[in-house]
Length: 100
Image (cartoon, rainbow, N blue to C red; front, side, top):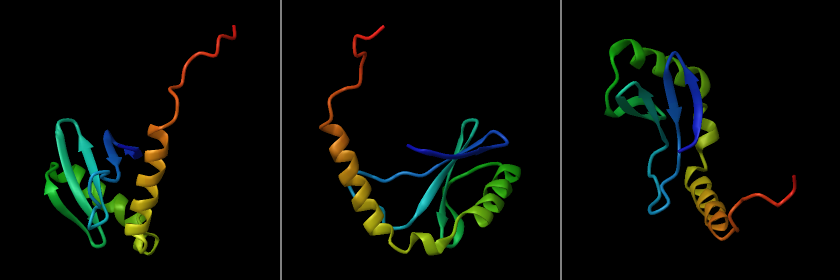
């Protein structure tokens, strides 16, 4: 899952689900052993939980950095990413080339 931000010990990740399309743009917030899922528009907790301080930091950061206008084409962005990842699966593994 791609990490898009890290602050005050909180990790923010956003990803696509390859087996089925996401229906609502969202991100995952991780702090120690806690995990929470937030929708992007509007920014609200939709799953899991964080303690109050981290929840406020995540919500404030999302208000500052997520622009709902950039997510208007969410289904298309999902489809393009799935196609790209599918192409990666067919690529040969990376390894040493034998050069010193």
